[in-house]
Image (cartoon, rainbow, N blue to C red; front, side):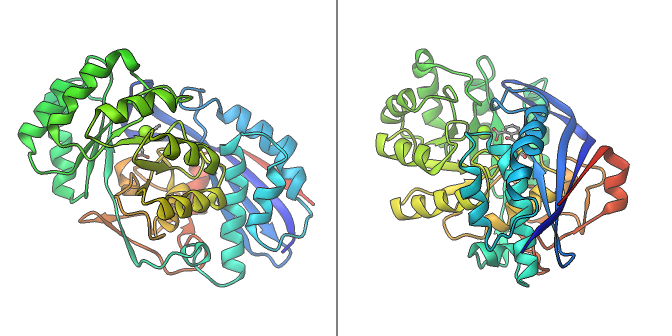
Length: 369
Ligand code: OSB
Ligand code: MG
């Protein structure tokens, strides 16, 4: 296929409920959608999951646009591409900037699947017709509010509950949740809020039978994570520390974690995500699909990836309605009793809802071969 045209939309959508992590609060979500077109008029869609600020990784919406416009688009526009894996190889000439790479690569995967009359899940090698999902719950003003919100999500049927923790909002919060919901599959995500000095505090979490503790330490650390994993019975899961298959291999060899959270954007696209998946499968390390507060386009990519066999733990891909009054795809992503039905249409399998997209588009850019 020849990449003939690329369109970028800068988007702004209000979230229904603010989402707070140890590093800050999201309410107004700015992101980008990217559409690629081939010489036959087929289209593919990708989403940039970079945030407005460099809190989660070093990338921002601004750096992501810069890298896409000035470096990535020139590598693919007008070129003949047989398979999306080639895009990953072309992009290897550029260091990191994984969310930027993933935006373009994801759109080309969707295009490739559509052109070959396959679902994106099939193109990746997945064969589930439904996936199990959980939900990620932000930090709330007080524990009573959190318990109420978590109770609501349990009623909706989500297969596991993830809550955010930070210093001063941890052991007592988890204790309260466990008292209210003794049997629910529960986990805690610290988004790098702790250091090795907090080891005794984190060890107290062992008594609550958590599925895992996600990323307690720094985003560039795998050494201290290996130290704490030896001290804990609860598995450590790495999120921010994992940008590639190589990071994954090193973390697993060091014993820094027992579970990996795969985010397509963080690792530079679906090709690398699949490689990490395959490696973890061979190593007996379970994986799950993380979320970045995506709109429907990004959610659709997550759903397809999650059909691979080693995604044995429920991920963070909840219903569109968990964050949005209106999503930019039809139908919207719906989790019923903790399951999302994998769509059967070609490519991502959901149709872009252009009218809805237009309502949230703040700027459009067009690039032609
Ligand atoms: O650490 O997984 C994370 C949201 C923003 C930044 C980082 C994270 C998250 C989430 C929410 O946990 C995942 C989602 O619901 O999309
Ligand atoms: Mg996380």
